[in-house]
Image 1 (tube, rainbow, N blue to C red):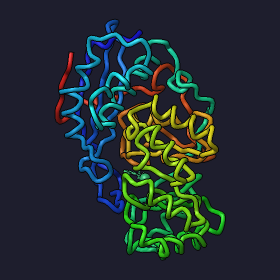
Image 2 (cartoon, rainbow, N blue to C red):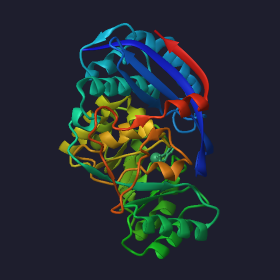
Image 3 (cartoon, protein in one colour):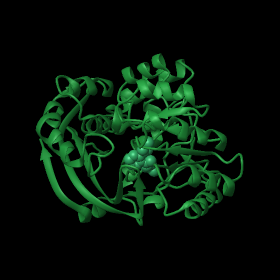
Image 4 (cartoon, rainbow, N blue to C red):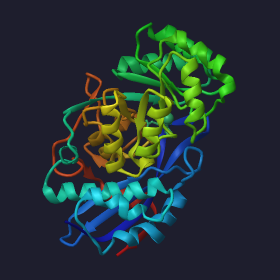
Length: 372
Ligand code: OSB
Ligand code: MG
């Protein structure tokens, strides 16, 4: 039983160490909404809303999420008793369309609170079995193919087990070819287009087939499944869907239509951990490998991704990189680190398994609201 006494929402700003360019926009500083959930006995857990500053990945932004959480979502759970974390999403979702990242932030916080109350790690609470997860890195679009090639070889030297290359028209085939030549024929490379292409680009994209990529992520529109199915028929490289999979039903549709062969699961995009677990298990039953995506999270959001990626069907390395890849200093201790094996150790301490640096969060906070 979880009784939520209050939710405090804060916005912090964290500058990225290196600007992150994808086909749909550039991020230099993350505006991050953090939630602090408190129960009747004073137990506390934190969670993170992954919405960006602009609606260029999904329709949500940090500002729409702020509105949705303070006006509609937090009032549904504050002062209420919830039997189990799995019951939270239906309560948040009834007659409120969309706003998945806002819903996910609360839903995940409730899982975190349950883990704290039970004195159990989040990974164990959700049924995770891996003690270490494989770490990948997502590289933004670079100035030219040579710059990309050296960034990719550096990442492989550092031990990353997968390197994802962002692509867009004008920065695709020649860039990925340069990366492949520098990295060698078997290096674990993939590409992510963030919706930059249409079906008319099928022949152009087919040039990637000879570059031995693990997968091509979300080449077509953010809400498309039908055209991805057409494209998959024309490509040998597996397609992986990110933006288009917003729920378990969309994952089912992907399989029915053949729109892709791999799924990137981001808990923020699908409304939280219960939905992520359901998609994971559905994919496992249907022979679809999954991996955990990232949204340039702080160490708090990362804790949820690490726990999720400890489930059995997360068989490919995730975009769950160490804190130092993103930030000069994270907001948790210890920071998230990559082992020399290119893995991250799943914490077994109670709750998120990291301590929250409250003082640093206070210093970084630009606005705050409490619903009690
Ligand atoms: O498409 O996976 C994506 C970041 C912001 C928005 C969309 C995406 C990404 C990433 C970053 O690829 C992955 C990470 O957090 O390291
Ligand atoms: Mg993506």
